[in-house]
Image 1 (cartoon, helix red, strand yellow):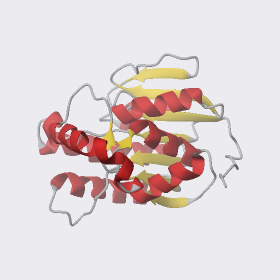
Image 2 (image 1 turned 90 degrees about the horizontal axis):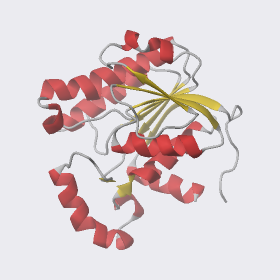
Image 3 (image 1 turned 45 degrees about the horizontal axis):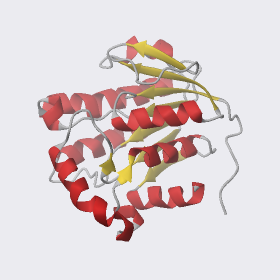
Image 4 (image 1 turned 60 degrees about the horizontal axis):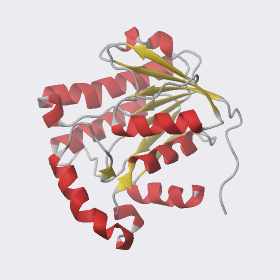
Amino acid sequence: MKKMDIHPKPYLNVVLMGATGATGEALLLELIQSQYIASVRCIGRSLPRYEHPKVEAILTPLNQAVDYAHALWGASVLFCCLGSTIKQAGSRTAFRSVDYDMVVDAAIMARETGIGHFCMVSAAGSKTSSPFFYSRVKAEAESAVAKGGPDRISIFRPGLLDAKRTKKRFLESLALAVLRPFAHILPAYARPLPVSDLARVMLNEALHPDTGLQIYEPGAIADCLKRIG
């Protein structure tokens, strides 16, 4: 049976950071199409792909949260889809600036401006003890967000994302080429996950009342997709 109850205040004003990335772009489309979303403020350095009466684009650097704090007031949910790779960022320091500093600062500012729910995209395998710098930074960001963010935190840890990216990621593209032909026989949690499906799960999470910290591992994301159909 599908879960049908919705947020007690279904017409939400939300903020989206990272709207020009693959996941953020897919989520923006879901937010535009949802009857339960009243407005979407997209905060970033570039204009989002989609124009719509619901959408307000606020162009600003993201390295100082005080520069965009005014855009958070009155929103109920902040969706954070910020993320990079060490190769794209150019260095470990630059990567950490995006995937840790900007994400954590956004969560803290969300709390300080009265936003009650922070949704962030992380990655499967995030552990502070991981031998991989990427996974350690993701885990450290999760921990800091859980401590300093709003009362409700939703963390999504997808595995391999299936997305059309403007900047190709070699290992991701190679893995997708190998796994796509076998997706129908792989367990749901092990299949490449279309970014549109991740976006649907994130929107569904925002529309249902809850409290505290919720972490969605790949299997939980797959289970949620089954429930929402």
